[in-house]
Length: 78
Image (cartoon, rainbow, N blue to C red; front, top):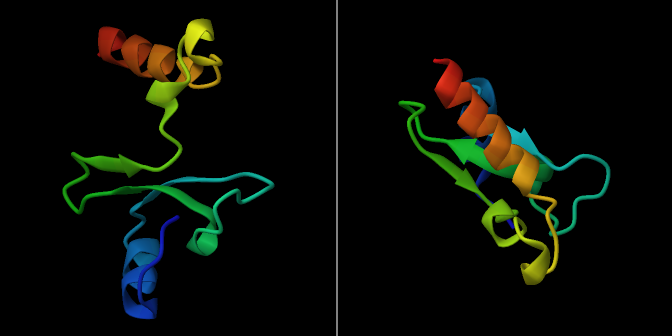
């Protein structure tokens, strides 16, 4: 789960560096339901849910696949 001190949390929120949040349930209790944050230069995203582990039915599910398909489509369109 994501946790930090109050100053860091305020900076992340203020600089709009929170990339993704859990909707509804917060399965791991992260602060402000944070699931992903961005680096200050917006080039790196840290992501907790690990969608790469959910892209193949043989690995137990495909819930992460839409994220990777969306990223690929965005890159191809650019």
